Length: 262
Image 1 (tube, one colour):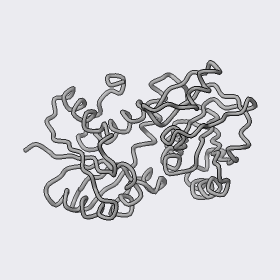
Image 2 (tube, one colour):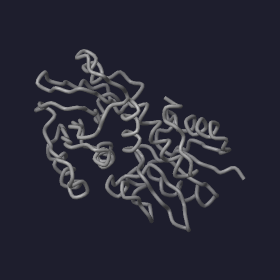
Image 3 (spheres, helix red, strand yellow):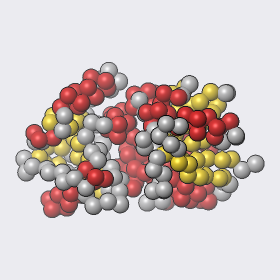
Image 4 (cartoon, one colour):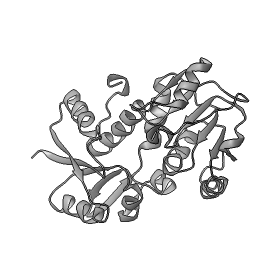
């Protein structure tokens, strides 16, 4: 019997998860069914329950439901517990399991570019769920210092407080977006600026050697500024592929090669 998978979100039409999972499956000789599912904002839990009750094998979760998915799970991986958000679901022994593969997807995408994370000094712009999901994997990959910069300093401080116990081996600091300065091996844009069309201004006193834009397929003032400085840069398609590969490997026990799909 062909196993059934889905990605759930609202909106959902923009999702590229089906094409990625079908591409992985084709490469590895696996047969599967993978569909997009639009869930009403107030009916996410019932959609998930129905999907698994009807024999679904696994589900990816996209915005705005990752926190709700976290709350639904009976069993959580360590990185999901730290992120407090889940993007990958499956059932095992009658229990709903959840993982967050976003951070590892980002790490794998960065390493595929031959950018080193060992002892790296990293600046992350934004203190939302995207940032929360990637800090633990970045630390496990060798980051030495992570600075979270946010428009509202209090939100960055809350994130710092929530996470410092989980990553004691890293120097975790915060600053306001308007006070950007210092020198970093890597700057990651985890704000919604590129999605909303907002301008993101990086002052001259901020020095950085690599730039990663989490969004993809949208104009990015962040990337424009990296280009103007002659800094190696990329947008987030690699992260999208990387997180999908992580989910695929959880469900199927075999891991596609990231380089085959970039």
